[in-house]
Length: 156
Image 1 (cartoon, helix red, strand yellow):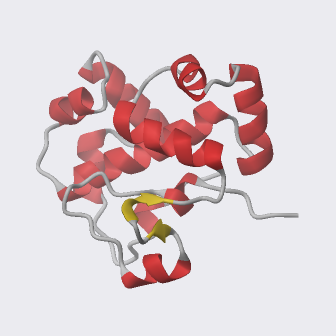
Image 2 (spheres, rainbow, N blue to C red):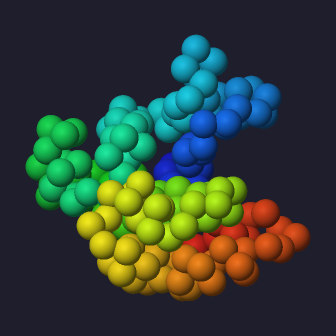
């Protein structure tokens, strides 16, 4: 049996100011020659993370075409490697991006919506509240806590 690859294990900051920690470099989570890229040990997942950072919220068909894998096979691969289909994995990763932007920037919901490539702010707010359990503005006000891991926790 092997460890499932979760978005939280591979999450890479979307902020320009991100510098990998010594621990990340030491554990091999980040390639020393390419410090802006986390490594999962799997080429498909690494390529998908790169595409997520460049293209953000797109359809699963879009990502499957870019990876050169039929969507059915991509979903099956992700189900085996991560325990969830690609859409669920993609959404969890994108929610981590959104939470970081809400936490560490002063971008408005409409600016984050545009940056995440949503066509409408309402769609972005519904998507975020469905996955995170709160509206973006509520999450921004309520994330403050003592446990930094709690803000990135997902109820499975």
